[in-house]
Each structure stands twice: as structure tokens, then as C-alpha cells.
Length: 621
Image 1 (cartoon, rainbow, N blue to C red):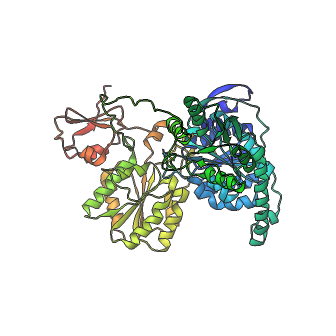
Image 2 (cartoon, one colour):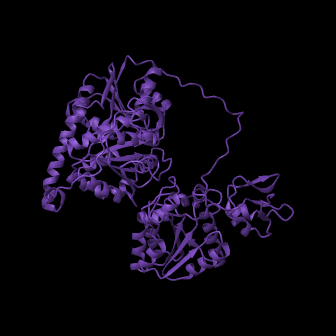
Image 3 (cartoon, rainbow, N blue to C red):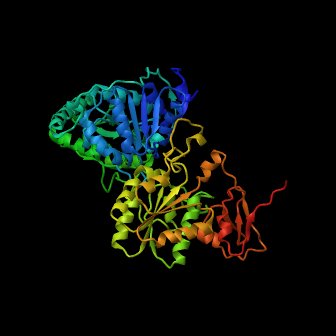
């Protein structure tokens, strides 16, 4: 049995934050869940997917976040507790649904988990999704610890049903990817079947209906503020004329900082866990006897602006500090040292930072730039596209997309000139090809193609654009941890009952006239096909089919043998390194070597070598 399905109240386990959140949903009686994978939220989806195979929980990997929210909204409006999971930028994709769903509301609890990514560990921006709560008029909850994330999930479902609205559950990377001991609680009965009661005056948002629904939404928001003012998720601790208002992981940093500075008896802390709508009465009461207040929040000044507005509304003129050049930045994550230093500055506390350890005698740690895995077929495709363009004396522009292949932007592959968001490579390719005379070659992964690349390709065919669209079909959603997508053969993963969508058939159905299917590890044939595609006037599509190396290994489909350098044949041209940059290569005594433990035998380097000095390792029978 999956460890998160164990019905043993009081049991303690060391869990990842995302595992704790998944357990919290199970304890809340979630019956329906859907997501599109995205770090830092991916492990929530993985655990729910695994549990759905051992229970009556319904879970699906939807093709994108918008669809995920649509299916979840329908389930929640049939009275089934439902969970929709995504990373922060995924909420941009689902925002069209979110804004109107807030008007319609739900009849069963619905929680929308958004995992924000301060410092952009795995994201293209660090937007603060608390603003989506304000924009949509929905309640936002924020845990400060791993165990609280589990407990708060049950409350989120209860709150959703009390308000008749979805609830946004905002985490950050530091919560999602921290570990802590978590105590299990009782599991509520799981309801997986419901009944949709037709109510077009609530559920069909034509303008006449929506006008009334907006009134209801604002009434619900006022009700949420009253609940927030009394909620135990907002906690006061300590005492003193100095005040700190904080949220999320910042709460732990604040507690440590006050202790380190020796001012626990001089400062009171208000931890906000119910962050939208702001509990105005609670905040006003907190502010009234303070000399000055510091707001500690990663990201944008969301609370700071609301607290300052509340102070003004209540005629309070005390200094309220937060984001500034001297104190907290709007950039990146905070840490205990940063928070401690800012508290000292804000409250004029004598404090000397600990001396920085002298590391001048320690060798500098070598940089490890992000790199494609050894044997990754994307590397082969990038090399082949560059080789084809060079042979044709063609200068190319390469819009790319979100996935492992984004890493192709670095030299020597240099095949990522413009990256915006999921699926944008087809749309941006159309724009570049229209206003530039250079050939445009864009790249997209199989999962991203299904997510949102199809519409841009359809647009390109309709408007007769001129570019080559390379679909990197590695048979899995690789970057986020090998989740399925509609093109995956689910039987390889030992799952039954799924269909498989053929990318080539989809592309044909969209009206693309020039389609090439290549095997990237056959370099000569691939380059020839790419040249034909580059020479074509109009939209040409190349489908590069080869399993992700790590995925192939996990399903026991990896068959290659490691390669080695034949020293007496190698003339040290280093084409293998300079054109491929595979991490299996290294230099020893100025000679190129291959790490046999990393090499998977893709053979591309052997095909690149001008001396045929790279051959499979000979193994003894």
C-alpha cells in the first residue's frame, strides 16, 4: 500500500512537503484531482497518481493547466472534493477559467494549489500568485511549515465549501521541497461520484447572469474577510512595541532572527496564513499599540500594501517598513541571515554580522552549467540542425520552448534564441519568419506540443508562414520527472486503459504538407531530412522520435553499449567536445576520454569524429 494511504492516525513519517500536501488532500477526502506537472509542485501529482492506482481516487495528468482546472471545476460542481495542482506560471494558463469560475463558485470543495518559485530554481519568472487571489476575489491560504501544509489542506477544502468558492493554496519551493516529520490524522470519507444539479442562472455566465454573480462574489469575499479575522491560521505571538507581520517560510526566519538578536521580549509577531482577503480588523488591532512595524514577505509587497492601506483607513501613522533599497528586496528567496539583518536595521538594534569565514585558500568550486544528459537525443537533433544549416550556408533563428531542450541555448549547440512560455515556439516562429529574412527553425517537446504548441502550428498553417517546426518526441514529459502525456505508450509504464495520440497524425490533420520523421541517432539520414525541411517554403515539420535516455533506462529499453576513444587513431581535433559537449566526455593529460559509466552508447560522437576514433567498448564474454 502507498505510504500516504495508510489509515493510521498518529503515525509519524518523514515527508517531503509535497508528500505532506498530498496526504493532506487524502485526509480531506479528495475524490478528484488533476494537474499538468511543473516543478516545484510535481511530486504532489506523482503521489496522487500513484495512489489513484491503489484506491478509488480519480487522478489525471491533463494536457495543460487550463484543461486541468476545467475538469476539476466540473467535478467540484458535481459535489466532489477536487484538487487542481500546478506551478505558479501554470496559473497564467488557467487564468481564463479561474476568473469566471470565481463567479460561478462550486458545490463541493475545490482547492487550487499554486507552487510559486522564488529565485526561479526551475522557472522563467518568479511571479507572486497571491495577486491572483486579489484579482479573482478568492481566498488565499499560505502554510509556513511542511506539517502545517498538510493540516491546512483539510481546512482549505472546508473553507471552500463554506464560501462556495474555490480556494487558492499558495506554497513556495522551500515548503514544497523541504522534509519534516508529519503526523497523520483521520481520513475523511472519500466521495468520488456526485451529481450535477442544473442551475443555468449560476452556471451559464452570459452577461445578464454574470452581473448578479459578481455581486455574489463580492459578498463571499466580505464573508471571507470576516472568517480571516477569526481564523487560527493568523497567529500572534510574543509581545512588545515593535511589530513584525510575516507569512510562509519567512515566519521561521523571523522567529530565529528575534531570538538571535535577543529581542523576543520587545517584538510581537503576526503570522498571516489566511492572506487574502487580509484580516483587516486583526491587522488594525495589531498595529494600534506598535511604535513601528516591519513586513517580512518574499516576492511582491502584497501584504505591505494592504497593511499600509489598513493603517490609513484606521488613522494610524506609525512607520510601516518592508520593501526598500535599505531593507527587503523583491528579488529571490530570503534566508535567516537576510531577515535577521533587516530586522536589526528596521528596529535600530546593535548587531554585528558574524565574520565571514576566510575561504581565500580554498579552491573555487567549478561551475556546473545546466546540461543535457549524456545520450540525450535532443543534443543529436541540435547538432544535426546546425550541421544542415551550415552545409546550406543558412543563418537560422531558433525560437525554443519550455523543457529539457531549453538547455540547447548554451554553446556549442546554441539553438535557443527566444524562449517565453509553454507552447510559444510555434507562435514566435511565425512572427520571426514574417519580419526576418533568415530561416526560422523552432523547437518544441512532445508534452509541450500537446500542452499548447498545437494552436500555434494551426495558426501558422492557416496564415501560410514559413518556418521549420521540430517536435522533439522523447516519449515522455521528461524535465519534470517522467510524467505521461497523450503521446506516451502507457503500457510501457504498466498502466492500462489509456489511449495514445500519434503526433504525426495530428500534424497531418492540421494541414502540414511537409512532414519528416527522423531517428536522431542516425545522423546522416537525419541531416538529409532536415536539409529538405529547411529548403521547403512554408510550414515544414520534423518529428524527432527517440526515447528520453533516462526514461528508456527506467522501462528497460536502453540497449546501447558505452563507447571509448581509440587513442592511436585520435588526432585530438575535439569535434566531439566542441560540437556536442556531451557530459560523458572529459580531458585527461590533454587527451579526450569518455566516462564509460555515463556513456549510454547513442553513437552520435562516433558519427561526428572525422578519424573514426570512437568505437564501442569491447567487453569480454
